[in-house]
Length: 214
Image (cartoon, rainbow, N blue to C red; front, side, top):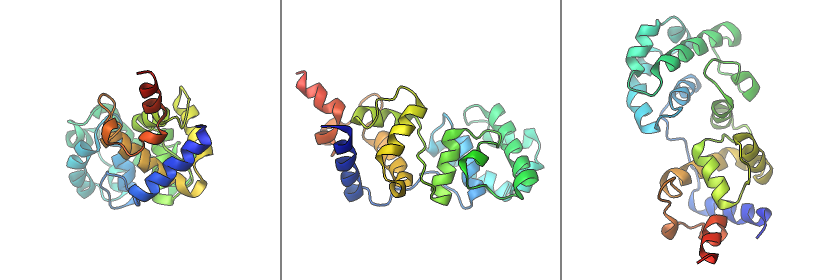
């Protein structure tokens, strides 16, 4: 089975079984999603969601966060991974939104990447979730699942993103990101993938190869 066939069948399965996947980060505005995604780096969405209600209450607009002190922000996120760096990034991000973008979260990934704390993955998440841009964010789940299924042989995030961008139709890319991340989070887990109950067995390269070697 070649990669084109895999994309076709896997897309068909996800479309039938995961119709409208959404981010599991809680948010109410584009700015607040940006805050949540920055906080979620190397941290679970569940933990981030525990802290964001108070963050959003204290800092409803970029200008509120831009004028906050490091200590104020740090106290709210100190139990999240890398709180020192993230506190600085959040304040710097808000300040740049205010000074360069009239307090509006930009829609283009290239512009998003100019914000402190925003790398390619975060930029693609915001662009796809908020603005439905045809980009795919590759996190650890997407990277792992794409390689296991045989949708990519890439050894870097950039290479996997390129393969997924070529394999999924533009209108499906924002959704495909959620398909893969949720599948990786709950089924194709890192240490103990639930292959026996996975609906993608028939097209999964790793599952097929492991059974052929028995």
